[in-house]
Length: 91
Ligand SMILES: [Zn+2]
Image (cartoon, rainbow, N blue to C red; front, side, top):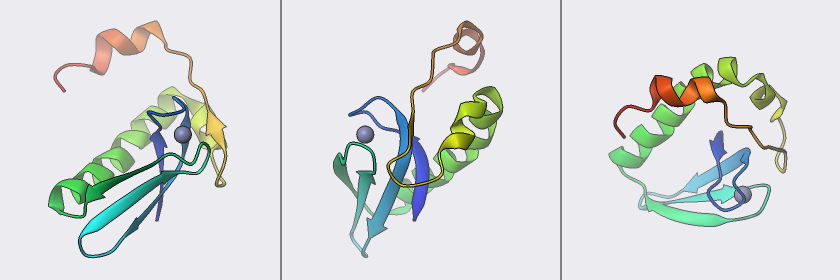
């Protein structure tokens, strides 16, 4: 499957592919090819769901994210002042 996510390696929003077997999930940034693994468990699945969920909100805030369509695409978002005060809260 593919998700749009912020890559911590290239610091861009990119298409990330997720491949998993029963035990491990491999996340690969299609832009810089950075790879990391996570256990394929309920936490990881929840994380993916919450990334997808928060993406809708984020896409409204940053319409640039709609330009991410194909593997290798990347978008660098400019930080916006209004975002910081709003939704950071607890992490
Ligand atoms: Zn990357």
